[in-house]
Amino acid sequence: MSEHPRRWAALAVLSLTLVAVTLDNSVLNTALPSLAHGLHATTSDLQWITDAYTLVFASALILAGSLGARLGSRRALIGGLVVFGGGSAIAALSDSPGQLIAWRAVMGLGAAFVMPATLAIITRIFTPAERPKAFAAWSAAAGVGVLIGPVTGGALLEHYSWSSAFWINVPLVAAALVAVFRLVPAVPAVRTGRLDVLGAVLSTAAVALLVDFVIQAPSRGWTSIFGFGELAVAAFLSVFFVIWQLRTSSPLVRLDLFANRTFLLAALSLAVVFFVLFGTLFELSQYLQLVHGYSPLVAGLGAMPFAVAMATTSATSALLSKRLGVRWTLVLGLSLAVVGLLSLSTTAVHTAFWQVAFGTGIIGLGMGMMMAPASLQISGSVPAEYSSMAGALNSVIRELGGVLGIAVLGTVVSSAYRGDPALVLPDADLPAAHAAAAALPPADAQRVLSAADAAFTAAMDRGALVAAGIALLMALAVAVIRPAAPVPAVPVLVPQPA
Image 1: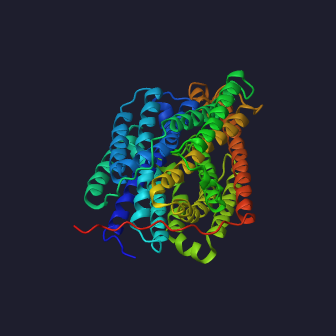
Image 2 (image 1 turned 60 degrees about the horizontal axis):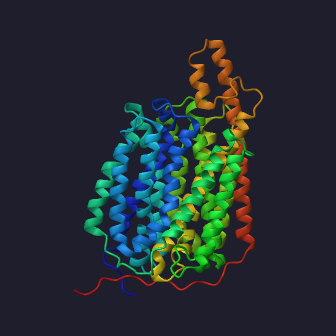
Image 3 (image 1 turned 45 degrees about the horizontal axis):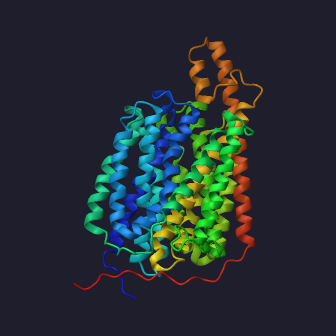
């Protein structure tokens, strides 16, 4: 089969765009305590500053993939980078949590066009024999973003304000745009029928209501009338979305893809591993900076073992999946995530830094070996005209898992924390307790901090146990359920003669 002559240079550029997008979230995790102080943000504000990006990203991905197929994946990539970079610059100028949440949502919209476009282009310019290596390199780039993000964020916050966490995106996006124009080939636009606007509206609204219900439940109460109303509307919209997708001639999502066991297990595995990752890192950042009192730079170094392990196993996952097969590679990756989470569930207030790093490193090993083979199963399992849809599904599955991980595990931790009878200030979350203690006499401050730190650490351990249980159930499901027959390979795109 013919090969595209610029495929490896294009892959390097597409990986750079992925680094720019993943760097943002990993830098932000390090900056959360600084944001809480600089913008007087509550825990709920911090969750929405994180979730606004991922929620819009996840909600808009399918629509962005469909539009990208119509516009051409390269055009969608360029447009998404412009919106993401512009949103980053304006977000850095925010002077309230509400403004920052809004511009994070704009950044998520831009990223929604970037991610499926990169996957669609990679799928089309590489031959089936080379795709495992290409997807492994693409997945390793995500590890690089996570690797340099916390350290970069910590170094910036040592000398600059929280806004530097957003300014860093601007030169990265500018460099990526120049490289895209020079090296990434155009993928022909694909017409797949009318744009399913109703489907996009239904899916976006349903996801937004569901995540808001989970995040607000600790303050509203799980049995509040408003919360139940929100959940009921989300369920109704979800059912309506499924019915509409089955009836419309041009569905936004081909639901029949999920009838393929191989596709379904790969999708659920990705969702679960991102669920436990995002939820765990969100809490761990507060633990390292508030409970331990580490600087943003030192706290950022805590993510290094995770990122190094993830990047290493991502780069070698093609060889591993060739030896073990995709199914058992996924089982092994999920099992390692369980081991890492169980290690983190034993964390105490005075646990040594290296013990926390060990747990995150084990999770990184598992996640790295899973990403490439699972993504390849998803993106390579559809006809060529649906490669953008598959790329969008790949990304929405991961990001929706991350959104729900922050929401669900954040809620588990928050509920356990507030329910601790030893708290001196039961109505104050951990950042608020530390802020209040700063204005108290030393003896009273120590009493407030000791109770708050112990309660948060115990709550974080409970969240890690919940995450470990979910990952274990997914590993058992992948091990027990036999995969479906192999699907036809997506044809490669080659340059046309002049």
